[in-house]
Each structure stands twice: as C-alpha cells, then as structure tokens.
Image (cartoon, rainbow, N blue to C red; front, top):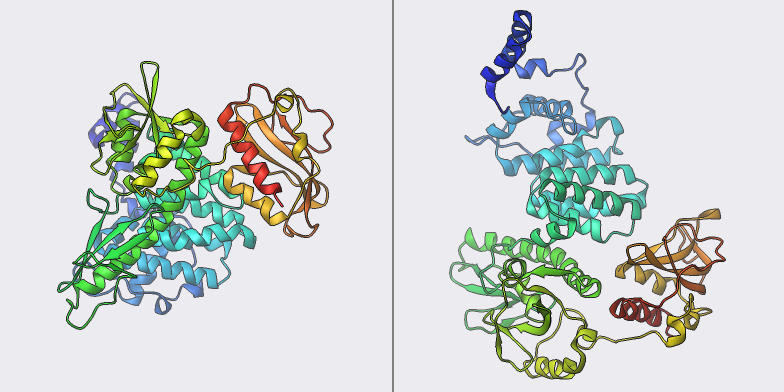
Length: 518
C-alpha cells in the first residue's frame, strides 16, 4: 500500500529466491478471490432485494435483483476493520445517495427481523455506505438501545459513526460521549472520541472544539434560502434557535412551504436543506452551550489564536461568543472583554481592546468580575444582549468559615428531594453511584478536580430500572472524597473543604441549594 510492488519484492529478495517466488505469487493473486472465505455467508430471507430500496448506477439505471444479492454478499463478507475488496467496486459503480438509502433500508429490515447477531453486518454496512443523513437517523437509535437491552449493539453503533467519520458523524459521537443517560455507553463513546483525538494529536476537548461544522453559513452566521421567486434569510438567536426573515427583513414564524410560482426544483431542495440545517444545529446547540458553561466552571482556556479561529470567526458559534463576557490574561494582567458585533473586542467601558497574541482566553465567571459585575450587567442590558446561559446573573455562593474547616456540608444533610429533581443533576456533571445490594444506587458524586469528588449519601437509594420505586431521597451525608467509587457503607470522611477553588465551591453549593430547595 505504501511502497508499491517493487519495494516489497526488493525486501523479499533478502530472504532468498524461494521467498521472492512466494511473494510474487501473493502479489499476483486476484484480491477478490484470495479474500474469499472457505465458506460463503448465507443471506437471510429478511434481506430480500424486493423489500429494499434500489441501488442506482452512476451511468444510469438500477442494479437488477441478482446483482443486489451479490451486493448483499459483499457486505456480509466485510467485517469491522476488514472490508472485502469487492465493496470498492460497488461504491465506484453506484451512486453514494442510493447506497446510503439502500443501507438504511437493509438496517431497518434487520431490526424488524429481531437483529440476528450472526447478521450484524447489516449494522456495519451503515458505516461503509452511510452518509450524514444516516448519522442523524442512527444516533437516536443508539441512544435508546441500552434501555432496550441492546447495549452491545449500541457499542457497535459507535464504531459505525466512527467509520462514517464525517464531521457530522464525529459531532454526534461526541454528543453521545458528553450526554447520554447510560453510563456504559457514554464511557465507550468517550473512549472512541479519545481514539480519534489521539490520532489527530488532540485532546478530546480540543477535538470537540474543532468538530463544530459551519453548515455553509455566511460569515455573519446566516444563510439565504432561495425559492427562485422568493428569498428568505435564516439567522440564529442566543440559544442557536433559527429564525426566518423575508426579503424585506420582516420576521416570519416559520419558513413557508413552496408555492406554485416558486422554482419547482430549487424550492423543495432549499426547504429540505433548511430542515436538515435545523436538525443539525439543534444537535450542536445544546452541546455547545453546555460546553461553554462547563468551560466557565472548569476554568478552561484557549490561546488567542484558538479563540479567534474556533470561536470568533466561526459563523455559528459566533452567535454565542458575542453574548458572553470573556477574560484575557497576558503578562500577569487579567482584563474582561466582550466581542462586539463587528468582531472587534471591547472592555467594560466599551473602549476597543487589542487581544495580545500571547494571551490566554477563558469564559468569565461572575466571581472573576468583582466590582465590574454590575457595570457589565448594565452594559449588556443597554445593548439588549441575551445570554445563552446564566453568566452575569448567575447566583454566587460561598462556604462559611465553619464549612471550610469541616469535612462535611451539614447544611444539606437531612434534606429530602424528589428523585426526578435529583436526577437532573446528571446534566451538570454529577454521576450516579454503582448499584449495590438489590440493584440500588446509594450515592451521587461530582468530580471537583484531580483526585477529589463531592459525594452525597442517599437514603433509601435509587433502584436501577425503577428510579422512583423508593420515593424521595434524603441526604444522609455530603462530603469530599478521593474517589467516586464504593462509598457504601461509609463512616470516614477524609478531606476538608478548605482550599476548594471559589468558582468550583460556588457551583457545587448552587447545585445542592437548587436540588434541596422546597
């Protein structure tokens, strides 16, 4: 693959003429024949070509039923990481769109047949023939499978997304790694993303920054939907929700359906593009808002060049960036700033600010703004800037002197909360404990930093598969520990709260205050 036939034969020559002869024979073999197994796979009756979408030829026409059966055999011969060479002939000869549609139809028939394990090649076929629309349809299935007793299939599906490998596929894979209710699937997705990131020389977070597609938007973060006789501009608000304006700039509730006077081919295609755009941006929106909020809480920073290229210049993320206050740190000085509508930078006095090349940039937490917090709030109110998540108006909390010196948060112990409210913490980085006797989860935990976790001891605990089966939960103890692991039964509390970073302390107290509020 890398050196060519001649270099392989030259390497073999050092092993003698007999070796050269064997290697020549190997290289001369037809890969379509040499890769065939001794026993050909049997194709189940569920994969009847009559039930599947047509495969269209690039030169026109469609594959006849007998040829479709051969195509099915090519797919059945291919295994994860070991694709039968004949599959290349299929993809070179037939249209990509029809192959993706065919693969999805095949997958659906396999599901209807009960997903027979021996024929899971139908799932992996999506990775070899699927496209971005396949990704959009498959992701909700993968998210649901663990709850339906099909965790193994969901993990295989992660490999399918990685095999498709487009920006949209990696974006959805990253979304599963960040937020899915099934911990085991989430961990496998994180491992898969880590593999992809490592291959690119990036961290998982850095890969996440680079996975946000621009969706073909203009530099100002909008796009034009052209019906031929009518044109509409689509933009996005502070939550990346789309809005539509007509040619005169008048807002519309939604994009209208094509009319009789509109271009009969262009208008339906543009409306379909808008529908796909809405779906993709909806996937991106919640993840990116959450990631920026998590970056604020965790104190993650970027170089000035990364901030400019990945955020300020990005046509979609730009809508979020200009609605937040940022911190620039250079030469030991920290300055708060915002991004103006012309993509320049301004300080709290609305004076232009130059971002030094050596600066690091992060999202400001209200605790970082000190006495300037009120001025920033007033400035954003004057400009009517709505924020994607609570930043300037965020509640700020602090440990009391007694709590800082203690190894327990006594103010929350004895509090009772509904299970549903408690489970809401999982959206903020909290993890449910490992099931104990009778499958009951006895604690919740949240990572504070390397080697420290805040842990809540629950009574009576949450039964797996029947979350509200034991009713409301009482906080028996709240403490810091070295591990999120086995805390039941727990009698020692090894760490004290002094030295806890103020932003982290504030966020932890905010979570506990909200979840225990009556």
